[in-house]
Image 1: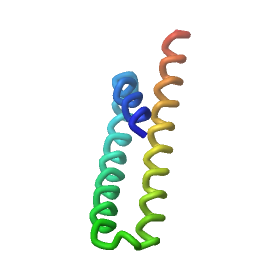
Image 2 (image 1 turned 135 degrees about the vertical axis):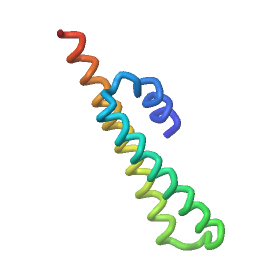
Image 3 (image 1 turned 90 degrees about the horizontal axis):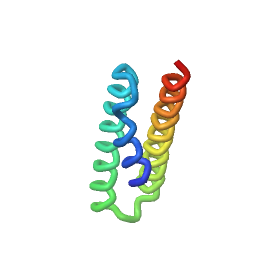
Image 4 (image 1 turned 90 degrees about the vertical axis):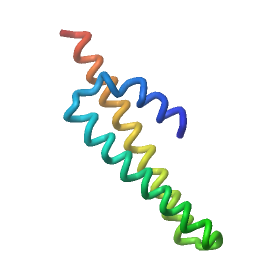
Length: 82
């Protein structure tokens, strides 16, 4: 996950603000949810529902980062052909 986060941080400035701002906002929501789930798991480490929720939330974060990186690459391709 760190690799994708680092790659997004490097590519973020290449995205139009109308794309980057919602991505950043959604990443913040996801990271907050992850923190909440981890806190809940600290109190109830055997809760399978929380574990599954954490996995799903990490997957959503990864999907968002991949999509943002793909948008960044596509935007760079468009700019290089202009």
